[in-house]
Amino acid sequence: MLAVLRNRTYRHLFAAQVIALVGTGLATVALGLLAYDIAGADAGEVLGTALAIKMLAYVAIAPAVGAVADRLPRRALMVTADLTRASVALMLPFVDQVWQVYVLVFLLQSASAAFTPTFQAVIPDVLPEERDYTRALSMSRLAYDLESLFSPALAAALLSVITYNWLFTGTVLGFLASATLVVSALLPAPVAEPVMHTGGAYAKATAGTRLFFAVPQLRSLLALNLAVAAASAMVTVNSVVYVRDFLGLSAGAVPLALGAYGAGSMIVAVSLPRVLEKVPDRAVMLRGALLLVLVFAGLGAITAAQSGSWRRPALLAVWSAFGAACSMVLTPTGRLIRRSAPPEQRTAAFAAQFSLSHSCWLLTYPLAGWLGAAAGLQWAVAALGAVTVASSLLAVRLWPARGTEHLRGRTMVSGAGREHVHSDLEPQHPHVVGALRVPDGWRHSHGRMADSLHAQH
Image (cartoon, rainbow, N blue to C red; front, top):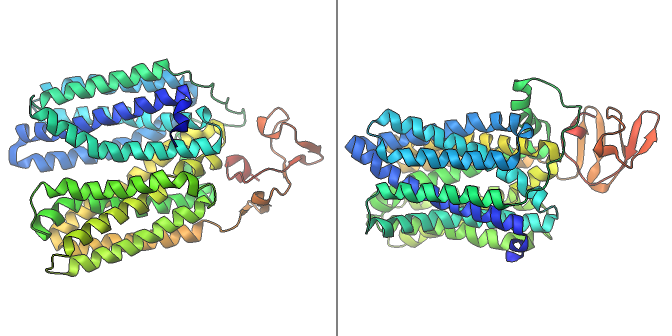
């Protein structure tokens, strides 16, 4: 899997991603301590609102960036986002009002909403071979999991010798280092957008979302995002409740529970590149979603138990299984989007995935927290489990088992390489280069292309 790091451009971009993630992790710890200094006992409310603002920024800003990304140099866009994040982090230690925290968090996360989809859309161009791209996806998954484990530990070590305000300095340095690495990377030229694309700013901003609703596999991905969000929200929001109140353990056991989730995710991420060489994405992702259903059933059994020393190892096993199942769904997601969107629409498609997936978390985070606090953990498990069951079954139904798609009255079995005709493309369009000219258009065959070009047939 590490072989992809031989590619200089990818190596620099991956290093930029890792360093920026570490900086973000340090900022998360420091922000919690800053909120406590400002709000005292109301720090939880401040952080909850800040997380909601973060999700709203992701949902609103990512599609807008996708609408204009094709007009901007990708390197400049990512570097500007990093410099913006560094500037905001530099100001955070000096705030003394809650509203200032909210404004700066919105600016910080808006810049992240610009950087991440652009970064994700660049990688398929840097690593055009699917095997290499799959390895890169696993590397990214590992980076996120390792950051969730490493950043809190690094923050704890630093806080033993410095005050928390200096953690923001580490965040600034991380974003500056990320910008430097992006500048040093030789990015391939993006594919020019075809003339056939029309519409105003709103049409451009919603192009990625419309692509998701037009393609069966991407509609299924919307349901899969909701299933993953339900599981991850249960872990993120209620781990501390399970550890401290349900099991009666010390605060030091909370990182252990979160580490179990990360370990399960990392094990799957490392294994998937070889698995995906033999097993289709559909089988892996849908089985991951159905595994989430089984894990929720196991969590329900643990939650119903009032006592027993077995509950602690059982909870760690369930958290690890949650991480593994989520990784089965999330790791191949980039492959699915890459195959479903033409190169000129990749940034819009990744921006739509970024926005729509965080819309799911915007729903499940408060559901996990408020329902768990108001009605108890059993009701939270039941509600989020029901969401997972419904969304997983919907994902199975929406994703056709065969490569047959019905697009505006025409059936195309593209998985089998069956010939089809494009009657609405200009002769100079890159998709019909080498195609046979026929009276009603251009005839050719290729592997499955579930993109907007074929959605118009």
